[in-house]
Length: 300
Image 1 (cartoon, rainbow, N blue to C red):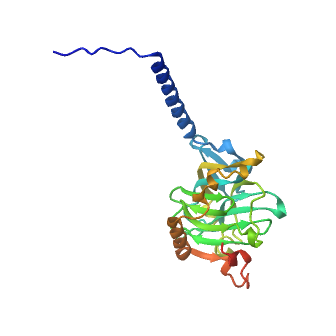
Image 2: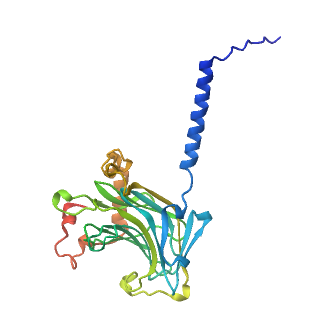
Image 3: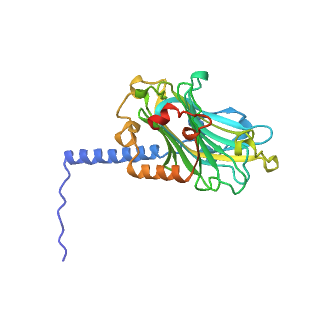
């Protein structure tokens, strides 16, 4: 024989608590949904040249860039940013890509006194490794090229390329592996990009006068058109113009202690890349720089 348990009536206070709990649960669920919403290309970017050579795919969450004998193409962010992190997933041109350059970079667009942070993917003959060249411009001074050969085929799948930019350093990442660090050495009189907001840009273009083996390898136009693909556009930073307090706010996540220097794991991966995959470093180019540039001596 089963006993029947008496049900205690719910008080008004308990009812209010349950309603608040349901509301908070719904709010959190809704917030997660909004946060997880895929950003589309047109949310943050616009085409800068050759609109016919940029095609939106996957409901606008990805794009296809085309290079042929008529034109390359490019796009840029609608806003400029001062400090933060930009990231994109890119699938590069497969097969024979010699003479092509796919670029992903930040630029202040201020002519002679510009700041710029570059990823440039230099195409190559079939079977040869893809080279990524990075460069840093600070207060109009560039010529700080470094090159590494990627340790995977970047044309078979998407890989993530990111730039972290804070008051302490600029870090270039490939799939979260740091491949270059440019430190803030202003205390030693070395320019550092921190005053000018920068937009986010990308281009696909012909550069066979220099891109592959110094221009020896030319584009094989019989392989055209060439395609590169982008998705997962992610920009987190201080939008400019905006509140002046944002750029100096120490609570911005990219200014947190864990982002002011590489951790031990990142430092090991960084050394691994530099030891095994670096093919050029302007700091060690005795022909161009008989005396190493000051940032090289200060430790970049």
